[in-house]
Image (cartoon, rainbow, N blue to C red):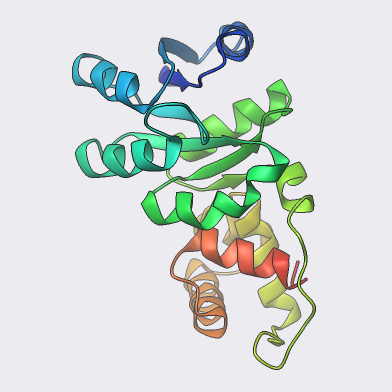
Length: 208
């Protein structure tokens, strides 16, 4: 497995050091640097390219939303995973809009951290189960009372777990073309712009 270069961006030094210790125990991860805010992070990226950034949202100075926006524009090959607290869930859509590819609660364990980094690095999105469970659910209305088939639900659940279309096809014993069709219909039915928006809509409206 390739070595994945990580930068930790968080304004709490104790949290950063603890996270670095955990990451250093994962063989395929190399922590390149730490940053206390978005400004410091962007300066680091000028000389130290990274594969994945673990991004705190509410940092002093430049916050995680603005930092992610700039990184997406200047360093599109670098992926961002948001590190969030329960009360920061309202920032989800803002982070998705500026390019974040994953969400983890700060209380995450090593296994989820490892899975998130690996999943995002290889081109998919990742959301921890705890994050999904903490999202407030909406009551169905005529506007969002969308009907999806059992097979579309199966596909949606696997999308939420970060599986690629090819992996979903293999797990459900379908052709990739069939999975592509199910996924396209899910986007049409929910008016989602991307996979993260689709997952959030599905969770909030009890589709998964």
